[in-house]
Image 1: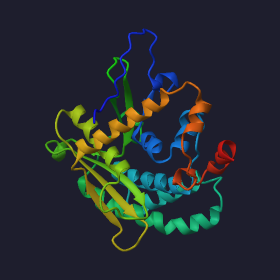
Image 2 (image 1 turned 120 degrees about the vertical axis):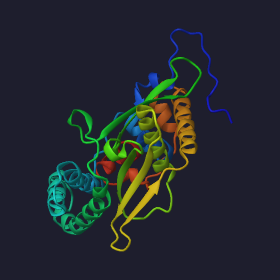
Image 3 (image 1 turned 90 degrees about the vertical axis):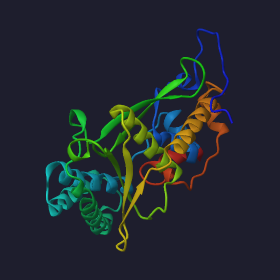
Image 4 (image 1 turned 180 degrees about the vertical axis):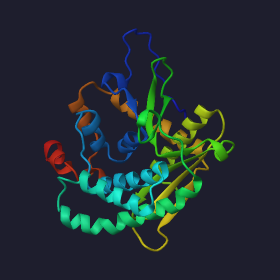
Length: 286
């Protein structure tokens, strides 16, 4: 199967599908959304609506804030937990069922931060992100066709990297995931994300890097899982093929309403849960 669609044009006004719809870049997450929940993707990228976060996202962000304080600021684990819970409380200021959710999630956040710190702190202090940002930005081009304009940048943000000192000869990149279930292997979406991050940092450093995901879990027994990226080319190929499909779909019409009518809608995917998802569901699919 050819990776690129054949679309050769001598028209100086030629626009690819992304340009037609004003989409300037992709990310691993929005490509995954296109593949898993095209209706949610269309609402986000064709209708330019913003899905707001809910409790699951706030919990993940809170855990990351606590771990950041420990890895970058040398905070004690109890201090990291306190910072995480404060972050969760602030992020969820307008959250539904706040008292009940905080009571339920406090022990989960405490356990996740503790486990993450126990696993990550032996690696030492990670590289400091640039410009005071919380994460490290990656930005690499993805080619989806034969024309000069048929390239779009993939923007992403990874959590932690160790590339200096004792890690200089064997750089390590780690992305932290908070979840309820322990994966036995990379899902397609997480595998793509890991492969893209691995490739981006390898290009930057001009040497191989090891890419790992650390999953900290809600369960008390066996509360963490490490996965190491070992099949980057497969996942990169899958990623490129989806980007090709995305551009091909966008090229079918410049009429966003027509495109919206052409895609399937599954309200049971997690993309349609929490935040303002019900409001957008009523607006576009009632």
